[in-house]
Image 1 (cartoon, rainbow, N blue to C red):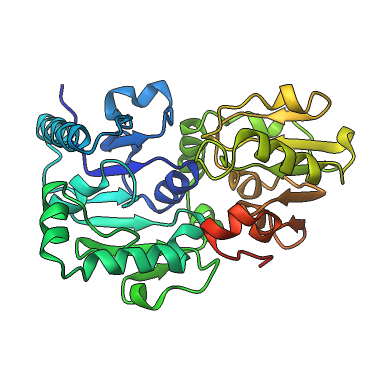
Image 2 (cartoon, rainbow, N blue to C red):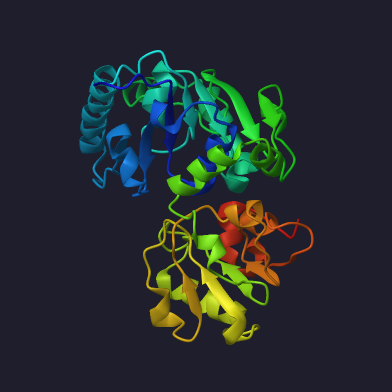
Length: 325
């Protein structure tokens, strides 16, 4: 029997997905998920989802042709599953988002510091206000639309307020609090979210109180640093800590084998939102990171070593100056 879906989720981020589920009021099997960046869902939801794969071709004309084929595929999936006229919850800057921004209303959820980044907002505003006829025609041909909440079809933006909200977005933004959203969930709803991420029993079988946890980021996977530069950077930071009491928590999108580079350090590569640690009252001695905002989601009592983008010139060039909050 065909399911009666109530909403669409478009995301490639576990953190973003957690925010959506915390705000969600529908049963999870009433949601259709479009998932990017090889994000894997619980097998229970495999019939409720479609995996979006990146177009790796570099020639512009081929990319345009493949984009149209991809948009047609998305249209077929949406019609087949009776998703037309539903709202889309999630991200508006990833593969597939231009299609949904063009034909659906979007409810945007935070994706770390990107939603506050002046450079990203500036690029989106430039595209929105583009006056060049050539650029306008090009944007129409490839269904290119402004991202990060700027486009007209983004009706609402849920942020946690980790940085100042950009002036251009203030009329759409609602500030949310993860802990309050979690607190307002029933025990059954909490269990459903934990089962969704396959971690229902995980937090009860491990002791973390004396540990320092280091949050990595997909810097080489995203082409920001080379693999060699990234490992050298991490080694320079991790030598400041006792290996016996250090845990490396890998980012969900990373593919590198950290055990190869850090054989004496415990590697936690289970894929789930880091924020679930705090929501389940898991305590660490300290959390360290280059510039992952997830480090601040363990509560004020947890000490944070936040090194910031100025630790490497390439990071500062791409992301701007992100310091300790």
